[in-house]
Length: 302
Length: 259
Image 1: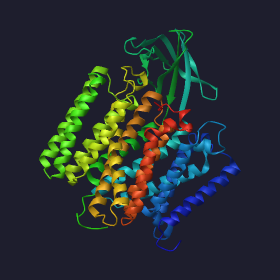
Image 2 (image 1 turned 60 degrees about the horizontal axis):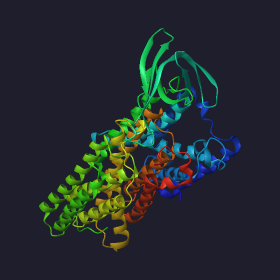
Image 3 (image 1 turned 180 degrees about the vertical axis):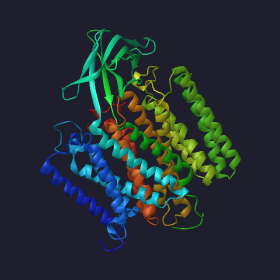
């Protein structure tokens, strides 16, 4: 190990080192505080990440490890580590607090975060490598790797700016206060006025268990600028107003038709995440048509 | 169309597929492809009939997803046969499909018309259908891995390994479509595209496992044995994602996907 050329063993060792480092950080600092990344810190982190990738690329001939990181020998152990920690996550109950120490809050567990950061860094670096040596046939590779990079980085960093609030509207009373999951009040720069809330049920012959077919709230949204948007909010059909999306979330059983509960969401990084997702979708189309290997010779033994 | 008619459509389809498989062994390609295609058409007619009479795509219950799986396995088999000319592939796809048909006949699940509001989305059908197609292809890749590891005994050819790669590449592409369609749908229905629900976590695990296979194959083209072991591991993850989480204590408590 550590003799050139590096292969998988070095990558597994680096991943193991990141896990140990992560455990130390977890022990010393406690769980990852994603809230600290709120704008503009996340923008700075993103810029730093891009600079780090460019510097790593620029020094590839001087530092052997950087050259190795651009190659598939580094990608395999990085994916394997991410896979292993995600399996641990899949096997443990994930809750906000309690459960198995550290493992039940995998998203704030330093080893998990560092291992994913390592994998994403490699994806970003190899994207840059292929962009710098651009040819038409590199497009599928770039779409796949850059797509994963953009989607994961902007999804993770943007998570700190994501606002998911709950707004309870009573009939004919414009409401401009919403609560976050910790129970803190947020004053909004618009108000939601409920005109009516209806539940349609499937007829009993279709579903004997009284199954709802449709929840719908007829609302007006009054913006600070004095604009009023009238619309219907339904499950699967959110209403969009000024960068916010209003979702049908819940209702009050005890006061039928009088109260509707909305989830309101603002995610300024969403366009970037979608850019990444659509690159991955285009990349998957390329995998189907251009990347799958051709048949080998029938007789050749391997 | 009613569920009671399933046995007759299934019988007709399986007979066509079995006849197609027989002609594949006899190297009568045109007959093999035509009969398999006919069986697929008969089976799809049933799905379409269910779709119309239920007034929604039959995709909600476990039994309904098995219906699509029994449909896509012969489709994948026919595609592989058309391109790679394996005599055995149609027999395999027929038997696999038959297994799922039998499960549906012996353990039919409620097929009510009702579809809860969250599932009433244009993303619902493509999300589940591409996933089922991916599962069918990756199931075939797993069988190839078992075949190469335990039955080929040193006579593995480059052609066979390339076929396995091809199944995984195609399967992973469809897995990617399924996962990302799910993300786009979740944004419209639940307000966020990814929330690490246990089903999503296992979908990510499955995706990473097949990604690992593809990268490993490129890095170590000669070590096809270890690659096959990765495929077996990946398929266990896939099963976990498809139905295993319904029995997993960590998932039962919290998942919106348990059904």
